[in-house]
Amino acid sequence: MSDEQPTGSRTARPASSGGVGVSTTLGIIVAAIAVLLGFLILRDINRDRDGGDVSAPVETQPVNTDVTGTDVTLPPIDTTTLPRTGYKVLVANASGISGSAGQMSTALQAEGFVVVQPATNAAETVGKQTVTVVFYVPGFETGAAAVAEVLGGVATQPVASPPPVESGDLGEATVVVLLGTDLAGKLLPGALPSASPAAAATTTTTG
Image 1 (cartoon, rainbow, N blue to C red):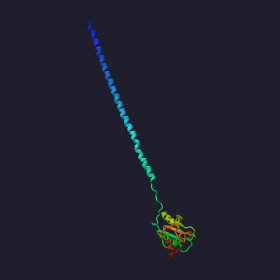
Image 2: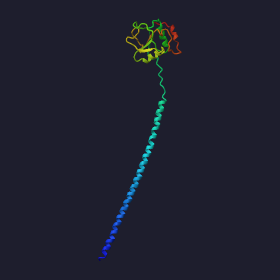
Image 3: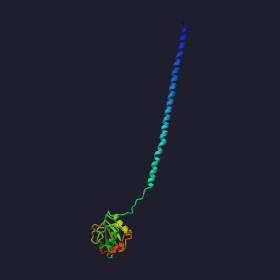
Image 4: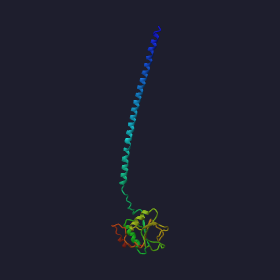
């Protein structure tokens, strides 16, 4: 009986060592699969990132080109047209030349301006003037500029209080031409070619 016991104990040891070997092999296989899956996942992530970086700058190119093209092709704004209606013009004679204010009123009316009739004289405090000036009521600067342009580009300025006219009252007028000797009895320097201010010489008006 003593000879069989060592034999049993020897056969039990190989059985336990074989179980340990199977567990180790399975662990290695699982670890290898995990590493492989991790590699595949990282590769897909890198591909997605590369694809986003390549497509991003393409969208900004046409926007900048369109803006630059629009700035270059902007048309110029025409500011040379000044209104000749919407206000009334009064001519006051400060030249000392009789009848010149009436002639100027008719000439301006022939150019399309709305002129207050009859013309008047400048206030006594103004005296004789050698240079024509256009005065305006605040808010009618463009009207004064239009009249001044036809008169050859004379100066414009706001009208004082009282205005420089004989009656001291402008009435309905919002633009006043204080006529000096430089333009008295003469053709309008900036008159339209189709106008005929020379016809004003036949008009008899005070001033």
